[in-house]
Amino acid sequence: MQPAPPRAPGQPSVVENVPGAAGSIGVQRMLDGPVDEYRVYLGTPSDTVLSPLSVAAARCRAEGLRRVARFSSSDDLLATHPGLRFADADARVDRVRDRAEPELDGASFGPGFINHLAMEGIRARLGR
Image (cartoon, rainbow, N blue to C red):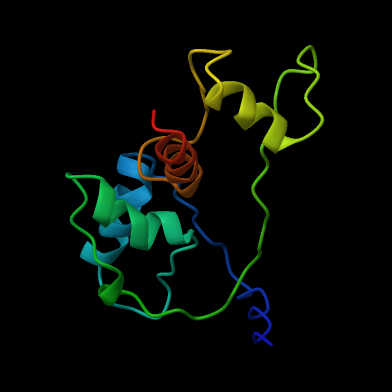
């Protein structure tokens, strides 16, 4: 069981949303800032672990961070257009494997994110 997040600090907070390079720019900005008890980063394993492995521009390393609390969890979703009547994911993959369709396209947050890497894993298993 994870510890509960701390209560509100009782003072204003500033939230910066720093996009780019699969989250690694925000991580690096936080790591390059002053070391104080007020600076925290809310991110995903994609930002802190996968980005440095898959994005050449990512300089941040997970070793520079210390996990404080788990904030949330989520599941990935594999979806398709409602006009395509596949019973399940296996039926969709079989259609590509049998070359009935030339491509298996996917959408994600961008290179280096877990969703992108999962889709690339499916493509690799299909020999694409």
